[in-house]
Length: 178
Image (cartoon, rainbow, N blue to C red; front, side):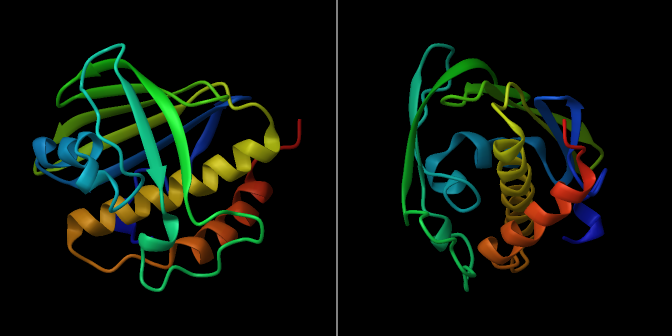
């Protein structure tokens, strides 16, 4: 990851089951919001899926991580080439805040705040079920946000899966075993 993207290089556990990651992204805020709310833009860094931006709306997120970067890196054995998940919009305040449920593991909130020509994104994923999932989510969110930064900055992102593997090891070293 380029240092231009970082507020803190790695995500932190602000509670035992809550991950917080902050990134400073190229703005303006409306452009960054588009990458959260618009399916075609979101699929370039995270997952596709049309979203009605109102509380209570259902969104099906569709991951195709092999398509995020070229090359994608080595997908782990047993991971499918596509993953689908039904989420619900909990809160939506364009272009500042989006909160969605995360099937089986709490909620994820995205908060955006202008910082001059840049935008601070704060992601909080709460109620992760266990350490193994926290390591997967930490590495996953880290890589997805690195790709978002690259897309917004107009630079080529690093291979998704290679970064995800590396980051799982980094988070394993950084986060204590409970």
